[in-house]
Image (cartoon, rainbow, N blue to C red; front, side, top):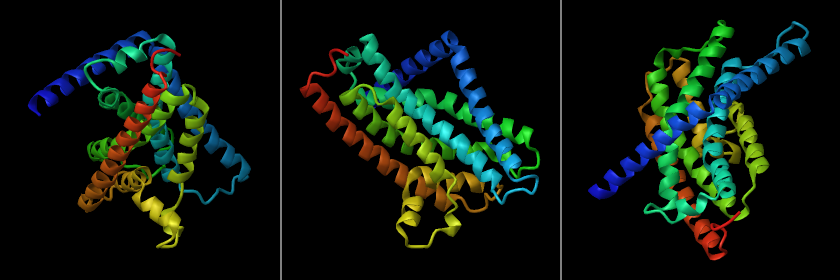
Length: 268
């Protein structure tokens, strides 16, 4: 067990160095992604204000901002797994990963941890940019360190979903549009108001137990400065994110085994 932890940490270190090299080599890609993600939501706000004719719409802008930033966080994670598997299939490096001393599932998990600092930084940069552009929003960023821990737990839940998309990528190679559509569907879930959902309904149960919507609800508490009782939400997030990660890991191993049987890892 000790050797496994040591080797896994070395793997995380290698992936982190790879991440730094990638950012240095392609800085415009990360900057342009953040810029256009910022512009899109600002354009949505502008469009809504124009449509309302100056009368205003009864919209929870704080929920919109946090949900949109979280959607960007989820999308970055998905692209970092399924997107890179697709790229490595084209470059011919996927086979090297699949025959390395570490399992492909372990490499992906280490990659997710190595990419987490960049993705969480993108989340907070967008949050700060929106808070600066719209100072009337009731967003309290002074508890960002609590949000950081919740983001990490949310990331674990995202990894479970990312494992699923990564497995599908192994089998079908190009599923970019599919998982991008799914990621934008998450935005509708994040913007859903839990208070109007009837208790005990299927939608309410899914909202309460799905790690991403559960994380959205917890982030709303943190950024509204309602941090008096976060122990129970924190434990809930740990449990359900962990369940999703384990389930995703298992499904990925099943799909990886199928891909090996079909000889899909040796060539594009």
